[in-house]
Each structure stands twice: as C-alpha cells, then as structure tokens.
Image (cartoon, rainbow, N blue to C red; front, side):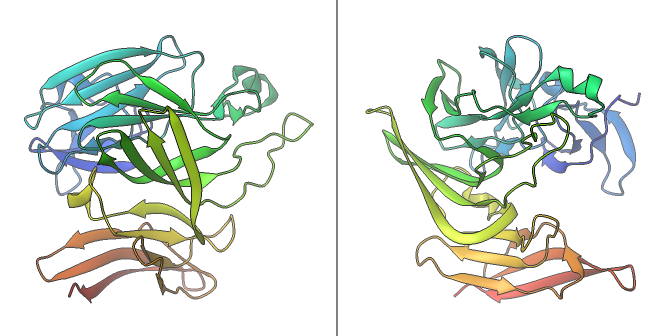
Length: 314
C-alpha cells in the first residue's frame, strides 16, 4: 500500500528499517536499493505521521519524535524503543499551531521549538500554496520535556525562527545547552500581504537554559552563514566539539562546506567555485579518520559530482 505522502526530506535507519521521511507525513519504508516497500512495518506508533528530523539516542537506540498539527492540541510527542515499539505517546496542548521542522534531545530531555513562524490559512485565498508566515505577536518559546514523558516547561526567548538544530546536551543537572541555526525573521510578509521579504541568512546561535532559575542566555557563536548542520551522530544529545554545515554566501546559494570548532572557535572551509552548489555534508566517522560526504552541482555543464574528503583525527 502506498501512502499519501512525499518523503523527500530525510532518511533514517532504525529498528532494522530504512524510513524515508517527510514534513509531518507518515514514514515510508524503502530498501537500500531505493525500492518502495510501503507503510512502516517496524514502527506502529509512527504510522500516523512524524517530523522529518527525529532524534536517535546513540547509546540507548531510542527514537524521539513529534508530530506538529494545525488541529488541537497541535503537538504530539512520541518515544520509540530500539525495537520500534512505542514507549511514550503524549498530546501536548499549545496556544496555536507552530511550524516545527526540527527538535533536539539531551541524554535526559527533549526540546521543542515553538517559534514565530506559524499557520495562517487566510493566505490560501490570496494564492499562497503554503499558509506559513512570520507572526510578530507570537512569543517564541523553547519547550523542555523529560525524555520519558511528563510536564513541558516553556522558556521564552527573543523572536526568531530555527529550521535546523545542531545539537543539545546536559551541561549539568539544571543546565541545558542548545545550538542551532537561527534566523531573526523568516517568511515575513510585506505590507501588501502577499510578497515575502527577502529572508536573512542563518547563523550559529547558542541557548543556555537554566532550569532552576527559569532563564535562557542567548548568544551568537560564530560570524558565518550556514544551513543543514551535521555532527558526528555518535555525539547526539551529548557534549561535542565539531559541527559541519553547508555555507550560504547569499540567501539564494548553498556553496561551500565549513567545519566549526566549538572549543577554539576556529573555522575550516571547503570552498566551492562560484556558480556551483553543493548538498548537505554528511559526517561518517571511522576509528582513526573521518569522511565528509557531499555532492556538488556544476551549473555550466549541468553535472553532479560526489566528493569524499578524508581527515586525520589525531
């Protein structure tokens, strides 16, 4: 049976199954040769839909995910064990539906992003295909929930939009660190109510959440414009040092790959010629080396190339 979904955002291997994921749609099982199998067989708790960016704990094998909806209660949280069986399924009440594309986890908590981009269905009558826009009057918040379920605590932050997180971790029992690519605004309409403003570029931002005091410290980490950040997935939810991302010299280009060292602040760049573009970098770790895998598109010849770049880890 084929599903009414277009899983073109992400691919995940979990509980012996390869899942192609869409924005909120049902996961689609595929083979390693990209043949469609149909609805997931190993993840019954996720068949009704989920984010394209769930998080897998590298130590426990648990899969944390959510489903954002434009119908009340607007958010559903789920935890799936390493065998694909649901262990937590929880509806979360929100004041309005938000555009949630990604989430983060630590070893003990999951993090939701209730930010300034949300749904406005009146836009459909004006010819917009996606009824999403920036909301000046919405209070941006980070939601923190124990990984195994419980009460969500919301922490207000400055207005922004986050499409992709980098990573998060517990600095101590009462402090969470969240790193993400932050936009000061996104999908903001002009006064005519139809045209979107040119979006700014995303930059690396850090949120330090104090659970005891109920406060959040926000700061820019680097003066680089990036998207599609990746890390060594063996460090998901744990302290880490390096991130890899596609560089954005303008808001219409993805051109180049950067490695950012969170300890030293140093930046390494793999430059791509002007006129070419590249895909999201993928980190593949080995015991003594790492490989950065990316695709590059050469516009004049309309050709694609696959690049594998090897680095010593010592």
